Image 1 (cartoon, rainbow, N blue to C red):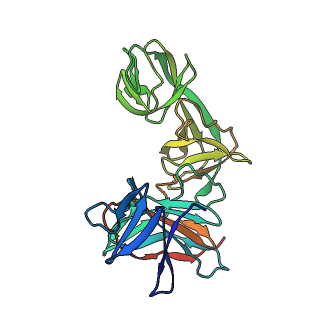
Image 2 (cartoon, rainbow, N blue to C red):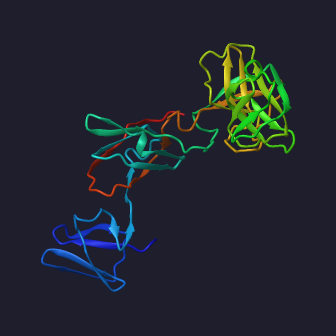
Length: 319
């Protein structure tokens, strides 16, 4: 455990707070608290300086608490509510997993801040409720939609004079640099001769192919999946890609699904593979499941902040 400064309250007959600053000596005089650090004298609770500023270092405010009602029941913790005049960043841990709420995700409602607990971005756990099955894929097709040699260089662009990208390429298609083997995703079709891509992999004179992988099912997908969901396949789930388009019975996926720049992260499934999907960690909020929930709140404000209570919408989890 890191060293801390503890405070004792005579009127409460107990230890009330932990502070991360470490003075060399402390003394109270005329209702004012002073401390010494590196031979310098410091006055505390001075409203002329920013809050949480000690010995030349700006600190954050942090609070840790635990929800543990009905400890014998597995529960779903859906939200965090803060009776506060400021939103805090919340890092959540349960005995089954973890989650978070960025301060910007909290919404002010009737004077209190509310936010839905989200999974940690990039945290893939196929045992969670956000992983659901689609069914067996009938036909998998990986096709080359276009190819050529670049004639220009620009940051995160693919440029070739004389092309017709607006009729052959779609957002989400995979760009393969066949000169050096790097990969990117098409983020916009700017014109017939220029594409925007998510990684800066193309310079003038390099060859490329533009591919699309489509999955055809024997049934309509309706609202089962959404663009941005991640596809897995097989008995031991293998990463397929990110869904970039949906058309009735067909999914189009990108093979660079985990955001890695320049390398293929997914693989195309085979005909007959069982397909499941995983919802986006931030966009979809299923909450945090567990017997208890530990919350770490952090506030970076340099002015006074009030926090009166922390609440959560909790209900019993049924497997």
